[in-house]
Amino acid sequence: MHKDRYDNTLTTTSGRAASLYHTGLDRLLAGEAHMDVPFVEAIEADPGFAAAYAGLARTRQTVGDTRGAREAMASARDLAGGVTAREQSQINMLSLMMEGKGAEALEAVYAHMDQFPRDAVVAQTSSSIYGLIGFSGQPGREAQTLAFLSRLAPHYGDDWWFASQYAFMFCETGQLKQAGEWIDHALAANPANAHAAHVRSHVSYEEGEVDQGIAFLKNWLPGYSKAGILHGHLSWHQALWTLQTGDIEGMWALCDDAVTPEAATGGAPLSVLVDTASLLHRAELAGVEVPKARWQAISAFAAEAFPKTGNAFVDMHAAISHAMAGETEALARIISQPAGPAADLTPSIARGFERMAQSDWAGAATHLKGAMADTARIGGSRAQRDLVEHSLLACLMRQGRKAEAKDLACLRRPVIADAYV
Image 1: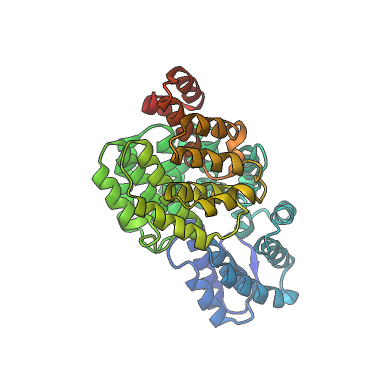
Image 2: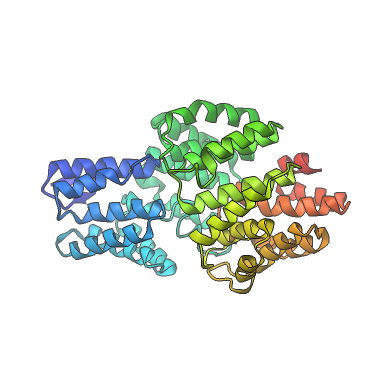
């Protein structure tokens, strides 16, 4: 009998397959490069290893390979008849998620974790800002994710993966002291954990630690493969801080080396779009001239990678790209055909960016204010959703409404107030 690192039984007679599964799981949880390879090799060692197919499906989904994920998931389902109850439940839950049935999948997560709390493959689908709770479009999703992890905390102890996830949710709910303590532990336990490096960057961002953030990533990133799924996004963090210091040349160098669609070789399409569009937009807000060709390139990428609406967080960044590129038809589709759990917020945000592209600051502010009631429902992190707030602040400042801008900024945190007013 073989088990994974969380003491869950694996239905395989092959010790080599079990060992490779262990490696694949660690790579998945740490955001390492080539996380799919160990699962492929585990399947080669044991073609009947259903859990390895499920792991392969999850890694493929994580990097945006929807077709490959569904193919692997179909193989897992075909082999599910002779596996443990935990593995059957895991395969069912992952299947629902990959079929786009988010609400049903989340119900299955809760039911599964009640029985099998140390199944990290299922837990990690709902433990982050991009998870099933994170993209549920529901009010209070950050607190809900923290509550989900708090229920699991007694079962994971000081586990490095869990510590990084727990830290992120403390960060996203404004509990920065706890976030710092948990993320420092996670990094000490596994310095190669890219998710921990990511959370460390978010904690530094929230605390306004620009120099410390830059120094950390300059030290950490060289040891992380560009094929890693978080390499482009961590470079985005570094580029934002570099922009804040006034080093425009350095910001562009980071952008072109690791953030854009051409450069972000390991990133999922969602991250590539979001990171590139938000960096360009924040640069413009800071007074940097962004060539229209850059906007046209990311607009074309958005249109190809996300031809349909359905995720407000993605649609928001696609809307920025289309608006700034002058792609009015693509932008009009996002405004007129919103879809997904937070679809009610998409038109206001998209219209706000449309007006910003036209230098209609009053009109843009009106539309952006309409989405400010609960931007958390859009999805993404607090740092990423600052894009809406920063845009509104810029619109107010350009109308000379400094007092109103300062009141808005102070509601968020002094970092924004200092930066804009």
